[in-house]
Structures are given as structure tokens and as C-alpha cells.
Image (cartoon, rainbow, N blue to C red; front, side, top):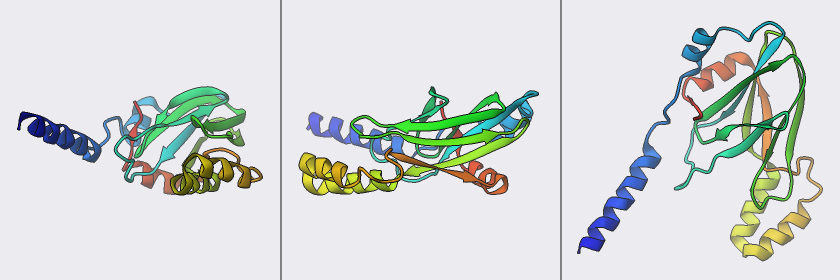
Length: 174
């Protein structure tokens, strides 16, 4: 009886943890506090939409110019200020055969917003591994090896107005 009760308490804790809101600073308050990027710099913001992140919401490993940002979990955003010029967003995942890359040029004083979503290849590999296990994953990796984006994520540039509307429902990743 005690084991059953403890099991139910553990399940309730997991479920309530999944349903809770992300904690962190909202972007408007953060922007007002920090102000614009300092002279000669630009701000890069990467968003991940709200949604069901699964029982264990594994963060996406997003990098800017090869350096880690923060784990991008469901319903969060990350940002970094960098000198104006050429930059590269990238993402990889454990046991995923490829790296996503997005090159862009950043002008001084400007903020750039990117929405992340699983790539077509990631969706195909997920479906094939769910249907065929390891064999499905291996076959899927071979079949999708010529995809335009070999990595797990796509980075979609967003217009500032749309991004600011979306970011109101998100929280800064810890």
C-alpha cells in the first residue's frame, strides 16, 4: 500500500512539474532593464515555442559562434549580445547524425530573432526510429542524408513585431 501511495505521489509530482510555467525574466522587462545592445553590438534572441515538451523536456543545445547559449527548453528563449558582423547559429543533438547551421550578418544596434523547430530530417528520423527501432534509425539516417539541413533544428528568422508578441508567453532559459 505504501509503495502504491509513494508511486502515485511521484507521478503527481512529475505531472504537476510538466504543467507548471517556466520561471525567468520576461523579455520586455529584461530589455527595459538592460537597454539596447552596447555600441557596435547586436542582440541575438532564439525562441522555442510553448507546447508539450514530454515527460522529460530535454533542452536543445543551441550555440552561437560555436559557444553554448543555454539549454533551450519548451516555452523559453535565450539571447546573447555580440559584436556586429557575421555569426553562426548551430545545433546538435546526442545520437543525431548532423549539425544544423544558420549563418547571418548582424548590424550594430539591431536585435535579431530566430524561431527554432525540429528539422524535417529530425521529424523523419524520429518517426522511423519509433516505427523500426535502431534499424529504422539507421535506415532513416541513410535515406535522409542528403537533406538540405542535416541537423536536428531549423532556425527561422522572425520579424520583430511577431517575435515580440510570441516572446511575451515565453521565459528566459535558466
